[in-house]
Image (cartoon, rainbow, N blue to C red; front, side, top):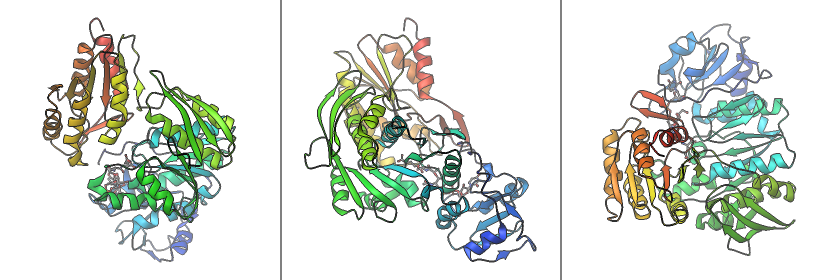
Length: 505
Ligand SMILES: CC(=O)N[C@H]1[C@@H](OP(=O)(O)OP(=O)(O)OC[C@H]2O[C@@H](n3ccc(=O)[nH]c3=O)[C@H](O)[C@@H]2O)O[C@H](CO)[C@@H](O)[C@@H]1O[C@H](C)C(=O)N[C@@H](C)C(=O)N[C@H](CCC(=O)O)C(=O)O
């Protein structure tokens, strides 16, 4: 069993039970094997052998590492009654379809009664800022009196479920099950992160979005998308009238401006610098405790006081506000909701343990994020040092490791290079790439410490009153994997522990 996916499965929608014959009819394909299986009830559909329950249909996907049918014995033992795949299973009745991954979104949406058509779904996509913007949208909707659900990489939260997910955007079976659960509990709308991997892999196929917001695009995930053009095309595919009713786009970003010029659906733009946008922020002030700005919208003005750190949060908050008002949410309530957010998990998140210096955990994992945040973090030092703990995750984007080390060392006084989640790679080789980049900036003291907890202790032992310690890379992710071994590791908890255990800290 592969232990990598750790996000717990959300509860089933009791309303969704159909016979195998009905599903076969819907897919237009005969039942192969299992004579007389037609009347058997299917209670849910899932794509992961590790979370199959009795009565489920198992969607066996051919992937890059496994074919779902590799787990046929496990799913049969777990009580699955049906397999849906591109070839017949040997132990269970099968519905054979050409491309199981492409079928997964529309099929699971149909199975659950197309829940996205009954909810107003506010998607957020883009390279950076998805989680923060999604949490701001959730706060805006909630303050306006809506019963809102939340699907973010940090948390899936709503009545009937509260899960720390393994992915930014869940696979279609979990997504549709979650939306159906939301609907059953009277939820009317949902803020949701939409990653480019999810779009490309069809995880959101079958989901109708009321609003799709675009934050920005920068050099990331190019191991997956090959080029910025194809990365952009993947995102842009969501901004068409058949997938999204209203596009909301930050045109401060050059890719955003290009996207806004080419959308085929109703479009709202926002900006902190361009007066021609539909919603414009002025009077921006950023300080050590947050930021404030005035949003000018077609429905009037609102002053927003952010209680979260970082100048980049102004753009995220403005995008969230625009998403809300574009859907007719009351401006004053939306502004109040966004202003009430006091923290976003793993996003420039302060860690308090009685220490005199500042300690912060942030998810930044690309150079665009570093350039957006490090100057601000530097300004918080008030003459002290910026101490950065950094690494890189295995299995993705090897090309960004050296730049990450180099940019960190250009801004920081001390760079401590450590492991993140090496996955199937050699952790020493990953560190070597980050170190090579960091050592290009001659001004910073560069330290290598493979053990992440020990790296935190080095940082907290060094830190003096006006210093700022920043742990980057993992944000709110709570798992790391060394080869076959997955363990729990939460940066916030572990940094706090290091502060408390530092003598005189
Ligand atoms: C590149 C990528 O996204 N790959 C995802 C994709 O993998 P894949 O199609 O190759 O499938 P596979 O791992 O070979 O497995 C094949 C099938 O066997 C099943 N399986 C597998 C193992 C097992 O024990 N039992 C089992 O049933 C799987 O559920 C799957 O249906 O489908 C898998 C099943 O859902 C995902 O786990 C896997 O995510 C990988 C691990 C991953 O790291 N994805 C990241 C890059 C990702 O998706 N990131 C974005 C966020 C990006 C951002 O920050 O913006 C996200 O949305 O999380």
